[in-house]
Structures are given as C-alpha cells and as structure tokens.
Length: 123
Image (tube, rainbow, N blue to C red; front, side):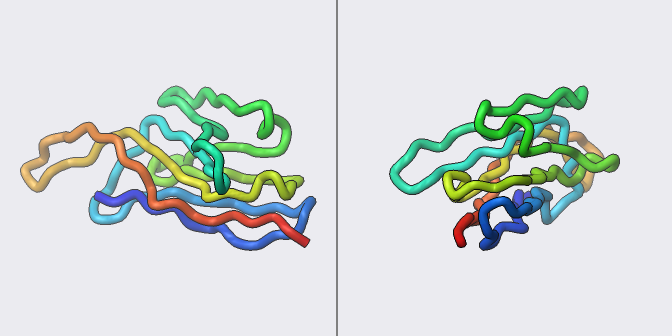
C-alpha cells in the first residue's frame, strides 16, 4: 500500500486549490488522516486533521480558509484550500491510518505517509 498526495500546483494569491490523498496497491479504508506542510527551512507542521468520527481540527493559520474532508467510501481525503496566501507555499503531506484486507481476508491496521505535493502561491 502506498499513500499518494496529488493536486498541488501554482496558484495566485487569493486563489483556491484542492489536494487529494489516496492509497494505491490495495483498497485502504481511511479512519483518520491529517494534512501537514513543510516550507523551506521550516519544520513540518499540522495543517488539519480528521478523526474516524469525522471531527476536524485546524491550525490557526488554516481556520476559515481550509477544509479537510473524506469521501463516503473512506478511500480519499481532501484538503480544500481557499484564499491562499504566499505563506501557504510548502510541500503538503498527508498521513492516514486505517486498514486493508490481505488476500486471506485478514484486516491489517496501518498508518502511512504520502510522498508530498508542492503548493506554490505566487503572482
């Protein structure tokens, strides 16, 4: 199972972008997940997370602008980013914990990190 983040790109200040996080290899049901970001020269920080029950939590910098969500099948997690600012420029990573089934039908709990997707906010 590999977790893949996608949807990053270049956007102008004030614009919007949605990044996605999904697993490849097996059907991985996501219980809880988080989006993190790391700007050059800075530590990785939590941007938003979602619990298995659907509760969400946001960094102060993301409140009111970003929305984390999960699809009904619990295979993909999204981060909708609006009103983007140059300081949002970073590599965005997803982390998800959940489960998949082996070929023998046994459930395996696991947590994975995605490879990151670059978000650049610039005019």
